[in-house]
Structures are given as structure tokens and as C-alpha cells.
Image 1 (cartoon, rainbow, N blue to C red):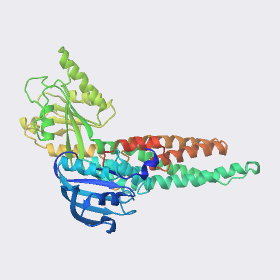
Image 2: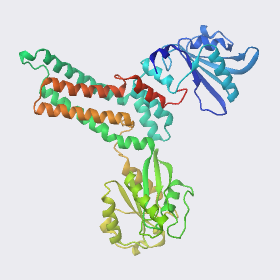
Image 3: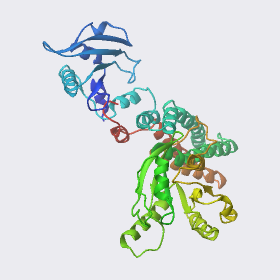
Length: 457
């Protein structure tokens, strides 16, 4: 949105829409306290200290709308670094609309999606990556996604990017200085030091890029597909993992003809489990479509759980299956089901296709252990809880472009190429890093990012 709108005073409901015990209406801008004071019957808010609470009434002429508590925040010690108020009222939709209408009549306007956070960014409260983390924090629905969002909002990711950008800026300045003395054939930027910087920078950037798959999974849920032959117990396993009767279970082969999926949390990490049609050759048109969809889900999944019936499967069957799944080049687990129906001594010799994880989906035997194995397979347990993890697609794409530019610089030093071309590629890397933190922005970029926020945030 154009910057002149920053001079307006904005207001919006900050709590979710719908009837609740309490609602909070936020107002921010130079006149926020004065405008709120115009509709408030109580102490003169303009004479009160910052970070104080005040009880009173909001009236529409003589009619009492509600008894409220009003919080006052004076610039620059507020979320937006502007004067701000928060009105805590009862959660009636009628009361909320009446108060918002009174604030608008008193001089405020309704905020656009994300406008409070956009003002906080533009006023220097935090950088763009931290602002985006606010939306991630609101949307966090697991411990892992919450921890990643908190770390990013507190600036862990931004510090790495800013530090790297500053080093590159210093070298870019030295290289460009060489261009001013090109006739003297002098070298201000030590090429060996530049090589060392490039190696460090590329190592950091590559690590961040590689963390995206884990970060995205933590944020959105890890797609985990359950596959196997008909009647292996896939639907029963799905129900056991979800701890509810999500899928229909039957002894009749081919009961599941389409994908069934739902989400659950394992030790703070969200997983999206997908039950599929049994893998087999079939002349049934509908079942064949289900089998094809199962194969598509395998290609899209982060983790494949291949479930087999220990009563009807041989080690040779598993060896062939293992070879086929390996061709997909993604993590998978082999899971032997229905162990409660056979003595361990009677199991076929599966040693040559180890490791296999043994369970009974029907009785939930060892399913909790399987959950831990699933978690350890897809989440790096050495990952420090405070380690920076990339979760945002925009950041990932920018980092890929940074890596590409730095690789060009590295190749240019080895060839070597002229300083002006080196400077061009370094500047491209600097610009892309700046786009991540907001040191380089456009109105279109800001409009796109903040339009995805909810109104009131």
C-alpha cells in the first residue's frame, strides 16, 4: 500500500470473528489515543501514561454500548511504534460493530490485512523476515512450527543474513574501488580473502537451502504415505496413528479405493498421514484409479511407510518391494504387520531385508515405538532447537538466487574475469539477501506479503 496511508489512524478487530466472551479492537496511528478518547466515558486517556489500563464506558450519544477496558501504548513503545490503544469489550458482534463504527466516525479508518505488522516493519520495529514470522507464529499448530517461528521472529535468521550481506558489501566496495583506479592496475580486494569469504558464505547459504525441506515440513506437516498390498492393514494403521476411526476397515480386499488422509502431532511435529488403495494389478476400473493415485502419492510424499502382512509375505517379496521403493529416492520404512497372530519363531527369515519394524496395527502393539522411528527418520535429531531453519518459500527462492550469484563470483575468480563483472555478481547476491530482510523492497512486494495476513494483525 502507498506510504501516505501511514499518516492515517487505523482500527480493526484483533481477535477472531464470531461470538466470544471478550473481543479486542486495536487502533494505531498518531491520533489513536485522541480518537479512542472521543468515544470513551471515563478518564481522559490523553493525559494517562503509556502501558496503563482504564475502565469505563463507550457510549453512542446517551446509549451505553459496553463497559470496556482500554490499554494505552504511546510511541515508540508499541507494536507499531505509533500511538496505539486496545479496547477489550464483550464479544458480541453487535458491540464490536458499534465500537468500530464509532471509531471510524471519530476519525479512524478500517485497517487492511496485515497493516499493523506492515507499519511495525516500516517504522523499524523489525525486519521483513521477522514480520513474516509473525504470520507463521499465528498459524503455528505444533510445537515444532511454533519454535521455528519464534526463533525467526526473534531475529535468528535475520542476523545470519545481515551479517553475510555486510561482509559482501565490504568486498563489493573494495572491488568497485579498483574500477576507479583501473589504469593503475591496483588490487584493493584481496582475492584469497574473497575466496575464503565465498566458501564461508556458500556453506552458510547451502545449509539454509537444505534446511528448507525440514522447515517446510515442520510448518505445513510432513506428508507420509502408507502403502502396501490389499488387506495388509493400512487403514487399521492409519486409525491407530490418528487414534480415531478415520478409515473403514474390512477383511474384503480393495475396500480403500481412494486416498484418505488426516493430520496428527508426534512429539510436537505435525504429520499428514495418507492411506492409499492396495497395490496390485486389477481389472476393476475404479480400483485401478486408486492404485494409480497411490503411486502418485508415493512420489509426492516425504516418507513412505510400506506395510506388509507377515502371514502372507515372503522375504523375496520384500526384497523386490524394497528395490522398487528405493528407486523413488526418498526415506521409507518397511513395517511388518499382524505380529500378534504369529509366534516370533515362526516368522520367515527376513534378516536379509532388515531393518523391518514389527507391529500389530489392530492391537496398537509397538505403534508408539513406530511413531518415534517415523519422527527420527524425517527430522534430524541433531538439529538444535535454536538453529535457523528456512520455512518461507520466498526466502528459499531468494537464497537459491544468492547461491547462483556467488557461484558465478567463485568461477570468475578462478578464470579470472574483470573486476566489474565480479562486482555485478556480488551486487546481485547482496540485493537478493536484502530482499529477504526488507533492506531492498518494492511496494508490490510489501503489498503481496502483508495482504496474506489477517485483518487486525
